[in-house]
Length: 336
Image (cartoon, rainbow, N blue to C red; front, side, top):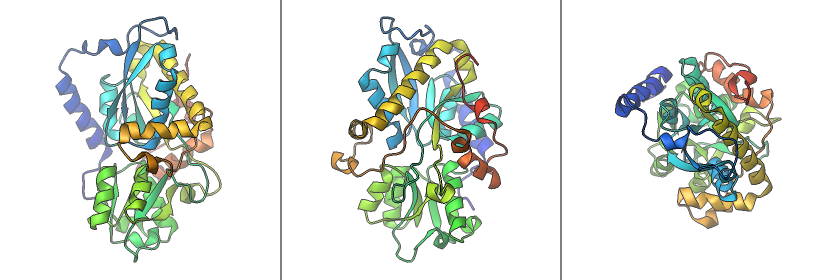
């Protein structure tokens, strides 16, 4: 059950149509953000690259990579643009307003299924496979709700409907013996969901850090670790940084540099968790003391087909996705 229109074609394509009309017929503005080619030389003119993100802890690796000079060494300066969810960032990337964006895997596969020329350039993060170390979880405050199966007949907030977070929620509800079709899913930003849970407007929401810890500080409890429910004996890739094949074709060297800087940022963040944590207050405005308690996702620059398929295959089961391409068709590699 959904109270907001969540048809994936309507949501992404309608937003894209609005953005295209707002952009008008000319696209010369913002030309300093790509165009000049790459080559990775810091001596070249610095290119400003627009990136769409959401205010979750995963994207701290980009801020840290920028501070460490991984992008500057390749002649890139990132400019960050906040959105509510990955699906909402797709139109800005497709039109070229942003050079790349952050999203759950499922939203980008949906956009591909609609014929949009999106492709992944790097993973964002992984679940870490550890009990009590959730990167996405169903939260609840009502003592009558003991597990995800108790959410039948109740309202659950998701930052994007018909998405990867809905896939995770549905799986956890089903794993606890409930029927997700009897749950009222509503769309709401993560900051608003924390407030709505406290007021009783919703009875649960799927959190991502720092909003899991913020909700716990407000009295909520974890009633399901969504990734452990989905991959109890392994890890799952949670998201991707994506762009379009059109932008890559126009400037492949730029995207080779972006990809290499992201990979370096992922590995550096894994090895320097305190530096990664220090970035989060810079774009979330949360108390630095709270940052010390956030669950850190797994970051790495290598990935497997099994990790990639964990969420998308389940999304196919729920009718959220029609099909999943092989990983090597989804991820762009230089020279391909």
